[in-house]
Structure formats: C-alpha cells, structure tokens
Image (tube, rainbow, N blue to C red; front, side, top):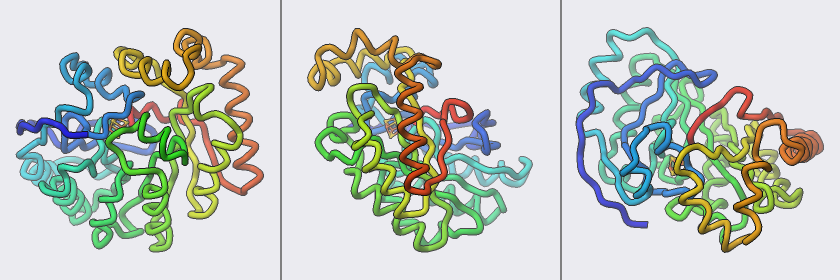
Length: 277
Ligand code: SF4
C-alpha cells in the first residue's frame, strides 16, 4: 500500500495515556500506512479526512525528537506506549528513524517503553531495545496470510510478526501478543485462534485478546472486505460484537481454554486496554 506523505509539526511528544500500564503515549506519525480495515485510530483522532483515506495519508511529526528532548527533562518518569494510534514501525520509519530517535531519548532519560507494532522493522532497533527498559507487543489477528493481507494490507505477514516475538523473547525482552480484533465468523474458529496462541506459547508471550470495536467510520472500510469474505456478516455484526453478547462470551471461553491448554497467560483487552492498535 503506497501512501502520500507530508510533514507536520507537533507541540507535544508525550501525551497522557489512560491505557493500563502506560503513563504516556507517543505517536511519531499521524496516520498509518498499514491501513488495517478494522482500525479505529481515525475515530480516536476525530479526523474525517484521515478516516476516509486511512492507509493512504501519513504525516510524520518532523520536530518530535526535539520536542521530546525538552519534555524528558521536565515531565515525571513513567511508561511510554509507542504507539497507540499509529504503527511506530510503518514503512516510512525505515527512512526517517523518528521512532528510533525517540526511543533512544526515552531510554537515555529513564522512561520505560512499551512498543506495539505489526512490522519487522522493529528488529532494526534491537540494539536499543533491551530487557531492562522495554517490552515489545505484536498484533496477530490470524496466521492465514491471505486473510491477514485483506484485513491489514500494508502490514507484515503474520509469520514475520511471529519472528519479531521470537527474536525479542530470545533476547530476554518481555513480549506480548495482541490477538485482536477477533471478528465473529472470520478469525474466531478454534483452529484459527489456536494457530495464533501457539505463537505466544512458543515465544513465552502473554496474550491480550480483543473484540472488534465498531467506532465511527470503522464499518465504512470494514464492510466491503467482510462482504467478500462472508456476505451475511456485515448486518449481523453489531449484535455479535457487543460486550456481554453470547457470541463474545463463547469466543472468550475459546481463547481462555486454548491458552489454558497451552500454558499461556491471557487477559481480555476490553477490560483494561482500549487501544486503537
Ligand atoms: S491497527 Fe495499528 S497498524 Fe493497523 S492501521 Fe491502525 S494503527 Fe496502523
């Protein structure tokens, strides 16, 4: 997926975060070239133009490293989530290295960093990402390469993401696997869930699982893909994904059962993790 790029400037690098375990979030880019069809970052950002062109527009924050260098001397220390409404290792990062420079500043100033990505590019920064200061999370919704490429057209294939967990786990870095969103009728079969959870078992990663979040503008991008996969699904989806629905209860039970069987720690994200990623 190719995207249009134009620089912007930011006033703040570290934003207060309400996500559990995070004191701040840091997003070096506005927009995300991975273009996942279920992503609700545009809704969190409240940007309609970005939402209608999600995956096609990326705005790097040109001055974020300088702003961050000023903030780390003045703000109280705490865990920084990198990132919460964009992927910090999307393709442009290979050239610009904004994320790399930011995590370097954070580590030097004693701010622990929690990274979440769908890209192998994070391995480039393995020299910086040490166990004492970092944890690394990778999102995998399915191990089916074809389905993943339709749901997450700009992201790395699932086996490449699994390699990220393998590499960091072998280096002693705490790793976690974000299994979500789980979409009823699409990636919720026991076999599909098991394939993903096996990656967590192999890499000693905790699983955080999540349901589909149908925030504003999500259905606009999701429906065409769902209609191709399962024509009956779009109109039934709203009822399926509501918190407390029988469908979600069954999915949760399946995830918990497979994790229990494979000895993997797991928790439901929506209880504690309203991330857009
Ligand atoms: S879900 Fe994450 S990786 Fe996918 S488009 Fe949204 S921010 Fe990017």
